[in-house]
Image (cartoon, rainbow, N blue to C red; front, side, top):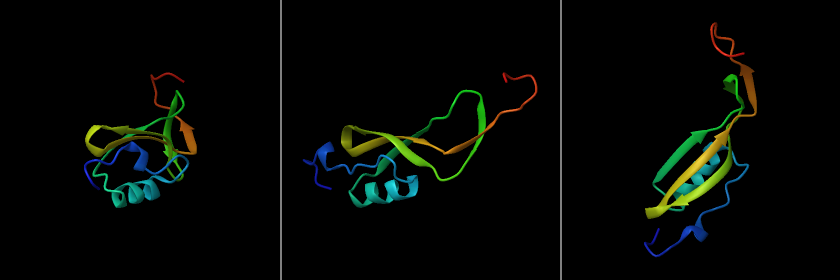
Length: 82
């Protein structure tokens, strides 16, 4: 990726699986990808295929992704909030 390219060249990743999004970003020249997992409050374990729900271009060809899983189980740890 050339140094003068901007965030406009970043592919639209919303709704894609994390694996596919990573592949497209790497092919586009993005080397540093940061992740945040979002989930409903009070939910513990997650399952299913992780998907991108938000993306943000950062300086120096870095990308931040917010990802979510489709299925969650309630966290049932003793002493915690239920």
